[in-house]
Image 1 (cartoon, rainbow, N blue to C red):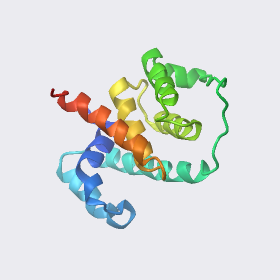
Image 2: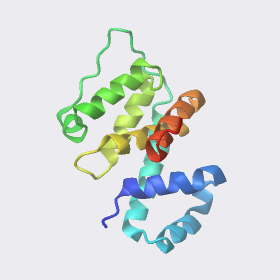
Image 3: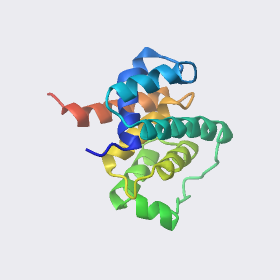
Length: 159
């Protein structure tokens, strides 16, 4: 099975998020553990580059993007080719329900475009949104909402 950067990111999120480790401080140890778990070293390096890009993007996007209620996000051709209509609609939906503000949306799109995949499916998009919200201060409520959505999809909703 070909492993992608998103597979490694999901694995990291599932296995290390509760440990509250500092990836900068424990990077070598975590990389070793990922290789021991069967992930390709090159892809592991790319996953850490992606995470570093997330940190840089968060710093660059510290100023809030002002958007009014009638604003519409127009996708560049490269974005539209990577995100199908279902994914773009989901991003719009997350904006409408208040999970993504304009700044967080742009960080999500930046991180999607940083992935090597030609196309991103809805499940991968949800994980990227979750990772972005986890790393955005003040977005705890939106993170919990998104986490519930992702975990319900993963394990099925039990009623």
